[in-house]
Length: 287
Image 1 (cartoon, rainbow, N blue to C red):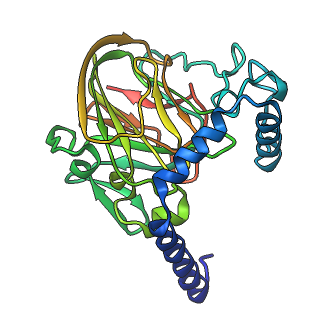
Image 2: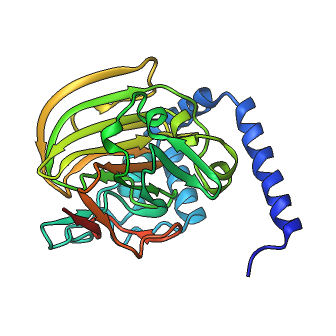
């Protein structure tokens, strides 16, 4: 049963007001301040941050390689915690698309005529997300996964391949959640992001890491901390990575978008907006 029309209208007004407030905030300044606090190794600071955060978001440390809060040197160390061996088994089917991270499916489907679904009634163009036209991805599959604060925040490769380039794109830092997805047009194409291109046996695969408010940094295994971005920069690479291998992490979280060329991937029909997923599970099948 749907929401009463009055409630839906009220929720939309709240979402619009929340987005308007964020436009007034010094987004990058707040994120830099959060980053400094998160890096602090002062005992009382890190202890207070970690314990209050773990309690507020019901963080499950039983799966972490270090399950004791006091084992972490800083809040960032805690937030990007490694998992215990075997906590996230990789799908056994060699043709499975491996889920790149823990989180919740925001949207999954087909890039129709160069457009991706952001939220009900809202789309954005692939060209705006990538900062350039990539027509070969039109009608290909895509999946968008949102990382909540309590989630595991390392990002892994969904299919084995060679990293051939990464494009850092500066932008705004709106928070990413259901409210902003519903009210901020082209949210993912407006926020700061890193577009990673991999050449695979199943065509070109794009993995896009999207920043958000309070995301202090997007970090990759090949470059370390790589944001905030001051200008658009494309960097060529040539490095092989296996599916399930870590490729990056969020120092405070956000969103991962994976795009495939048409005819190269079929997503699981059970993937729906709101579906909880875990790194390593199969999201679909490579063709």
